[in-house]
Image (cartoon, rainbow, N blue to C red; front, side):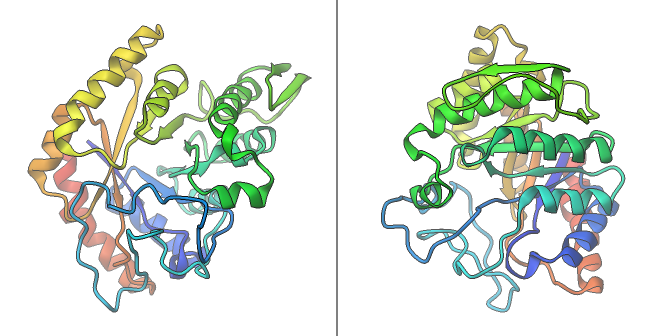
Length: 314
C-alpha cells in the first residue's frame, strides 16, 4: 500500500526551505504523496462556528514533546496560534513538485466553495502540466463562517458552490471550448489552456464524513479523504460509499480512499482499515519534525523504516 504525509505549510513548517527539503526527503523515504492544508485567514475566536474535530478524530493522538517545533490542539481549532503562517496550498504544492520527480502533491484540504473555480482550474492545470501529472486536489466545504464572510462567499450555499465548482473545473480541464451554466458559476465556450497532463484532469478527492459528503464523492469524486472514521465504522461506511457510487453508474473500484492517520497508528489497525476498503494512507505529522536540514533527513529516514516500509507490506 502507498502512504503519503501532511507535514508542511504551517508555522515553522511554512517556509519554502522546509517544503523543499521535506518533500525531497519524503520522496527519498518512499512516501507516495505530500499534502498541504488550507485556511485563507484565521481568527483568534470563532463566535459563529463550531470546529468539527474538537473532540478529536477517533484516533489516539501521539503525545507531543513540549519542545516540538509546532504545537497542535483539538480544542476550538487545531492550530493553536492564529498568528502562525499558513501558506497558500497550490503555491506550496508547486514548490514541493519542483523539488521532486515522482511524489504526488495535493491539498488536504482546499476549502473549495471559497475559491473561484476558473482561477483554481487554471492554477492546478498549470501545475499538473509542469510536473507531468502529479497534482491532486483534495476539497471540502469548510466549517468557519467567519472565513467565508472574509472572502465574500455565502456560507449557507457552500455545498452547492462546491458541486458547481467541481463540475466547472472538470469542464475547463477536459473540453477545448468549455461551457458551464450554474447558479453560482457560468461561462460559455471558454478556452483554458494548458490542460492538465493527467488523463481525466486533476483527480478530485473529497473530505468529510457527512451524508452530503458521501453523496458528493459517489457522484463527483475520484476519491475520499476521511479523517474522523473510527475503525469499527470503516467497513460499513466504505461499503455504503461503494454502493452509492455504483448507484450513480460509476465504478467504486476506481475510488482512492486515503485515510488520514497518525504516526503512532498500530499495524493491526492499519490492516483493519485496509480490509475495510482503505486503499492508501496519509500520515498527519504531529509537529515532531525538526526544521534543520540534517534533522529533516534523519526524521524522514526514520519514517521510511517505521512507516513507509511496514505499510508497503500490507
